[in-house]
Length: 329
Length: 305
Image (cartoon, rainbow over all chains, first blue to last red; front, side):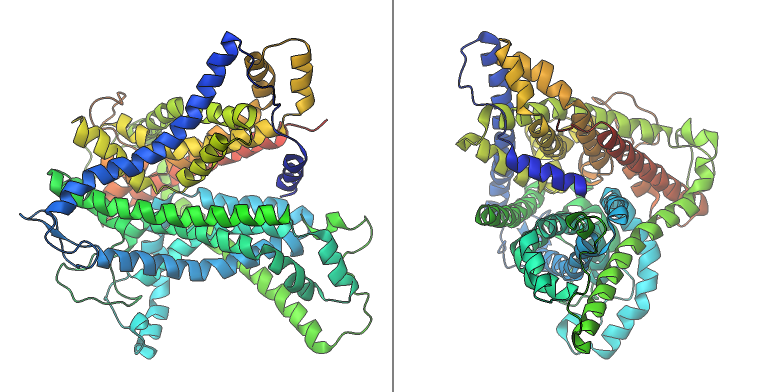
């Protein structure tokens, strides 16, 4: 914590590198070219990912007889193929949104605890422990979620759907534990570290003068936080939440393990207590069947939508972050 | 930064100097402190619970020496025995092949951003794309490599293809950390080197990168820890096998995540035990990489004068 902040100050103060202009030396041209080439390779890779997926998805989309955006069917194997993503989109958005709803308040709390409540001696190691949570592989979250957490959440699920089943989102769904509800809770735990890390960073940068001024005017600690730290960190919190959302949208294996696949002709159920498939889990579930080009193309088209979604969400998050950095600079 | 470091030593920053404040405000203040601490407690429960689960269910198999020396060849879900050697070897080979490609790109990319591109237009574009790359879901990276490797080139699904898809995940991780430590190298060092007439590329290779070396190692290890736990690319590009395979260019190769995935739906006890033991092995490997990486970062950080 303290280290990152010292680093931040260093970074702010220090001009990076030295601007010498081109030297014309052979070694410099070679090495500089290699470095520049690596930079360009990074851009090219991202462009290639989008471009290739698009190139391979287009033939399948052309052959598709159903509306890609609005159909609930998924039969890429038949001739002609029929597939649409509306179910996938709904489950992906529902599970990610639910996870975000759970994770962001807790992450803000943890970030406040680490920056303003915990004694410095404790904050360092504890930050480290929260980061370790991010290191646990997602397949472990998956098997833990379905085997250990899900049975413990079952009474809560049945209580909610039993008593508040009138709301479409809480309507009773499937009998087993593989619900969007359980998947969302696990996903919330998985994105907690990244949201915490970014929120913590902006909270730590809240200007000391503002905080001291608030305290000098007689504010309690909480009032000081509410009046200075939270407004200062607002855009940071938004972008941290977006980054968490980007992570959640693309999470594959944990969701695949936890969520129950609905039978192909089951009616649409918007509930948190239904099963379902996200873009990522749909692709992963059917990885073994990638044989014919149109069939694979359908999954690649789904992957393309996921790529575009995460690209947009991440880009917005970064733009907000850059904008607020410039404003505070 | 915590409060205590802001205030001068010996005085409490949040001392109540106001004399009397209303009870409601005081109560709110306490409530906020309780809620914030509760959030923190909530965040720690899952980590402890997960570690306890995998340790309590998997540890007994790890204590058997065979676990580290044998594969699962010829062993069914009904029979005990065998080990995770094949998966451990597969995970390490895949990760090292990925690192061999990612580390040069990541380090050189960071050198470009810090030493050459600086705040230019191209450097800003690279920096933005690195952020986007960080957010690319592993399944999308895997689909991309599948499209390239299998659909277009017509190659088999092999471990090297998995490594290629992991490159997309590891490059941004290595690049960001390297960039950060390169920026911590004091400019005085660069200036001194230039003043002695050392060429720029030699300054970077002999002065800047060695000074930042431990930081780069930390970044590489954290990147390795991240990709070793990835399962989605393995599902699409790296079919599981129970046998040992050292060749990333031909044949199926096992990995710890696919070993877990293989038996996770089994209900027979030997298979269930093996799932948890493989999970514990993976967790230990990843945590070890993390802890060592951060220890290196801590004890040999670039110091400012």
